[in-house]
Image (tube, rainbow, N blue to C red):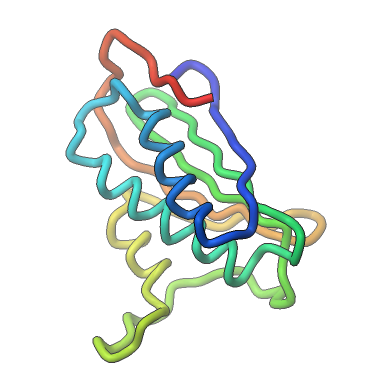
Length: 142
């Protein structure tokens, strides 16, 4: 992957799966494949958070995939929501709770992660993964 790849998604639940598929396609040819499930799960969690907490009504969220050396970075950028606080990791909720695990999972699965506030409303939440070098062919996501 020479250039970062990015795509804008609508603020709909179906976009979570679409974002996951976009990232998987962008990573075609990267090794080791054993990190792909971690990357896709983190993208799902970050996209869900962007829809629930970050995207204003009518706005979507942007997913960007980039690589440098043997590190892969995925970013989910939202347009801001009613909550102006930056996202943070909470203690893992009990097993009887259906939500609240997103950033906890990202922190556990990614090699590094963080939040970048935008000058205007919104945040970019990113996760980085150590991966092997790409195979001889490039990913095909556009």
